[in-house]
Image 1 (cartoon, rainbow, N blue to C red):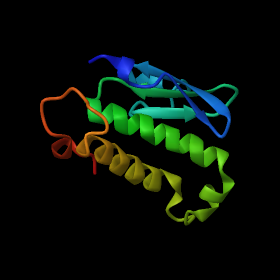
Image 2: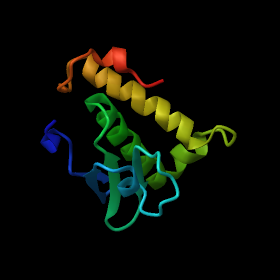
Image 3: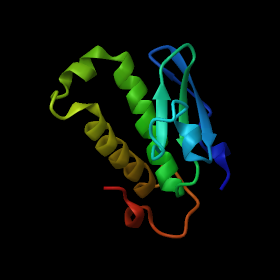
Length: 124
């Protein structure tokens, strides 16, 4: 799959995040605390987002959106404060990213190379 269709940078509230696409789990988390991450957002100047490319194309799109949402929440205290503490941001961001990825593909706004329909590979 060509990764050129996925963004290499994103600006969030005026801050640039570089997006790196990696093909090994250990390259996603440089702290080596979790070998199962599909993506990671690291704030900084510039910030960095890493996304695992061994996923299917809808999974990569979902992970890119997921990590961008982490950047948005990190830069926006109102959004962070709006979440219930017992849920936290991970479950909310996971669900929202999944729904947005499926919405973009199901409505033809984003075309991804794949064999099965996006709704059949939906992440729940």
